[in-house]
Image 1 (cartoon, helix red, strand yellow):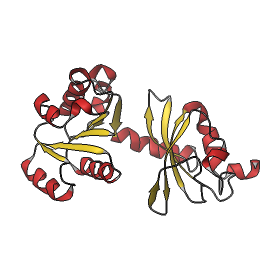
Image 2 (spheres, helix red, strand yellow; image 1 turned 30 degrees about the vertical axis):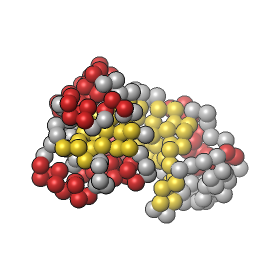
Image 3 (tube, helix red, strand yellow; image 1 turned 135 degrees about the horizontal axis):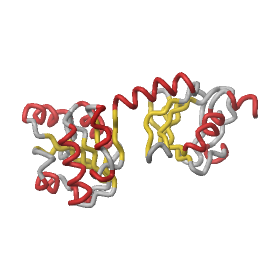
Image 4 (cartoon, helix red, strand yellow; image 1 turned 180 degrees about the horizontal axis):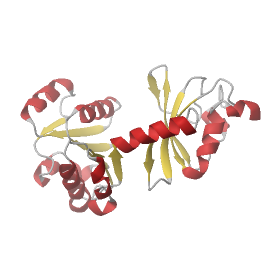
Length: 226
């Protein structure tokens, strides 16, 4: 996957490093000289692109024309909106993600401004608190497509019917896609034959209609139904 990240703060640096380690082609654009010098030491060679990502020429030099995803994660909302608008309407990037720094600006981060997914930190924190209180162990990390889909995390309970069974045999809903499994601090890419173990943390994209079913499959409630 080809990814362009605009903004070399902690979040941008972490995501760029993670994607580069897993083999994606990633370019991180940073305009601040002092920060760029630090990123040169922290990132793999060739990842950093120095310049202002709100400049079309800089985005072009970062390879935005061939990018499948652009993420604008600077600490300025106006800059993030300019970058996503350029990416979508000037360069035709199919998927754009933008960080919302000021919660009051969240309404601006819409498809009209070239934003597919808005990462509103205040909203995510509120959702985490609310979901933790109302849905047991399942946590909603973000909502997509006006809440039709959610990125959720659920821990495999030892008593669940999913423990010690392969992904293909568990019977996940058709509108549920497993993204990753975190097992004792290590990330696993789930395959059909991957066997879930008690304590695994499963991250998935799930339709709103299937959230209860997903939670039942992995949570303790499944133990009584097995």
